Amino acid sequence: MADENVYSQNLSLDEIVFENRNKSYGAYDIRSQYPRLLTKSFIIGTSLFLVAALSPFIYLTIKNMNKADEVQVQADLVEILQEDKIIEEPKEEEPPPPPPPKEEEKIEVIQNVVPEPVKAPKIETPPPPISKQLETQTGLVAQEGVKAPAYTPPPPPPSTGTKASTAEVKPQVSDTQIYNEVEQNAEFPGGINAFRNKFQNSFDGSAMNGDEGAVKSEITFVVERDGSITDVKANGKNSDFNAEAVRAIKSIKNKWTPGKINGQPVRLRFRFPVSMNFDG
Image (cartoon, rainbow, N blue to C red; front, side, top):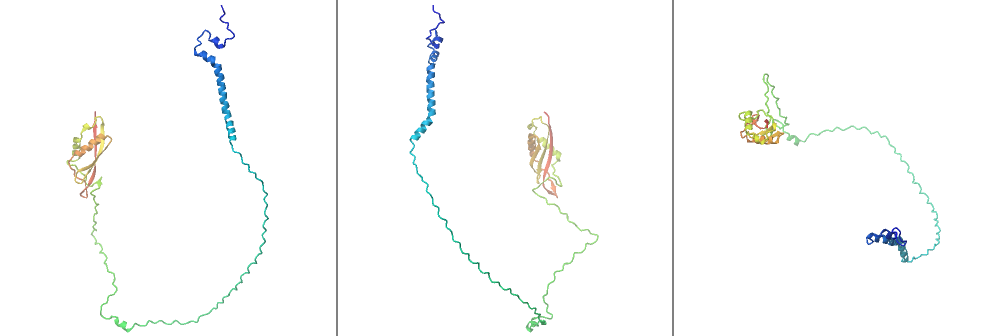
């Protein structure tokens, strides 16, 4: 019986590993072809690297081969002869013009001449001619003269024991202005308590939730000159209460006695505070 642990020297490592195993499995083919694939990959990679490295040199070589021949221009230096400097002849200086002749200063001689005194002749006004004198009216005929200002006699002094009468000036009353204070306040028929009772009877408590507790508001409206009310507003924290209060005030149709200033009816802004208690 041969020893199973003794292997032939011609066997490869893969044959030893896959001995008595399924060699048709892919791992055996991969391991057996690995050296050949590695050598092939190395050759291809090296070739690609050399192509990439040598491409610039190949490109420059082809470019130099197709380059046009350079045209050489032979430039010889030419000696430049310097021209002789033109020497300008000096111009003869013109003699300066002669100075202008000096004018002799004229000396004026002022002689003091004393005038001889001469008597001033008398100026006499000749009388008007006789024809002008005859035109002058004299005698008893009245002539218009300068009118004096009219004389205004002074006012007579106040008599003792009597007082000067002073007229009382009353302020003007406006028909459109809304007053906050008047001399005679506006009144509701039956008094303010009657107005309050009508307001309470007109107020619909169902508009409230019933658990608000004490609710306060100030209702303002304008009592017109004919006794009607306009511009009703309620200033309170509870909006539902304010809306119902305005509706209740507008539902009262009784007319007021308007407020008066100097006996004349005026527009008056009336304030009506309201407080109600709603317990749940």
